[in-house]
Length: 255
Image (tube, rainbow, N blue to C red; front, top):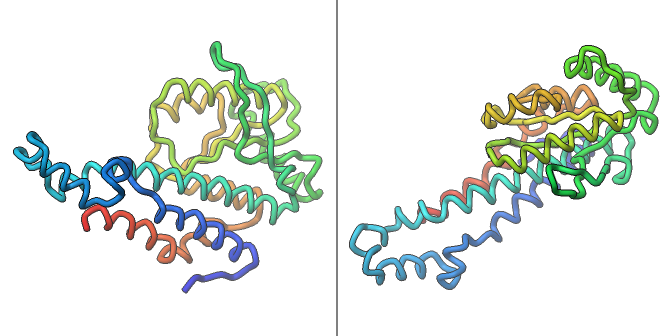
């Protein structure tokens, strides 16, 4: 049974379960091409003049083939959960609307111009007095970690929220850096909470020159410091409920 102790707990639980339920709808590409069932895929492999010789018509090979797309789908859903949950926490705990926590701008990265959005945005003058003072003070202290002599007056905080960052894609990295620079010159502190400890260390070290990066438990502590809500405690209390849909999908690979 879920452990829900507040209205915000209830909202976050429903949000999370809605995202996890979508995993059951995911059908890996090779299965779709084979007619929508894993046994059809294995039958195609068994009829193949190469696959049938080398053991690639086995259930083990089929599971390995399907695992890549399935893992990607799981991580995308986790990304959606963390982004939507943090925005929901800010809206509920800090009295913000969906419009208040949204931010977008046209960013130039290399020769490419594109519209980028922050995953969550807090503007100081929209916050209640005590929250504004607390968040503003934290932002000013963190800004000095980016530059010893800041020449910008902060008006808010913009977040790129990642449950984990394992890619090394250079174009994505350049776009993220361009977004951070835009935020800072606009008076918005660029903050990137990474809730796992498994992110690509090379990319993350590079990001630290333009983003305020928090990793692992530090990210949960950041959300609690800004909002007053202990998101990590909520997740730990409901861990068993949240694990089951993902474990079911993973087990289906070998069934």
